[in-house]
Image (cartoon, rainbow, N blue to C red):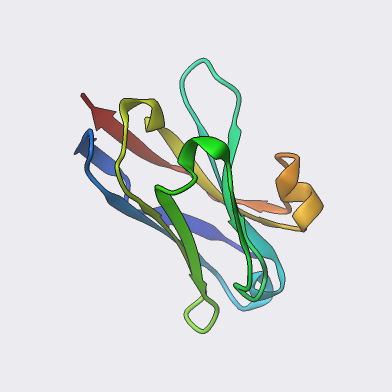
Length: 122
């Protein structure tokens, strides 16, 4: 079975940076678009960004546009989320996911990771 494992979360001051990684088992996920989502306490899970199966295109939600960058290395079966200029509003559990473009666009996926906590202090 395909397994997604996020890492790299932690505590950072406002204005700082973190780089999250998502390792996926096998090469199956190399045929999927990959997305990042986040969920803050008391809020619904929201779309952060996504990258197409071959890394040719990326898409970002307005709150993170210009601050976050998604990349993938299919040879290493990894997807990364570089987060710069972090703000307290970015505090959430971040999830990586694999799915079709339409799935990811509407908050759905075929596979989900367990999530990693990102906390941004003021």
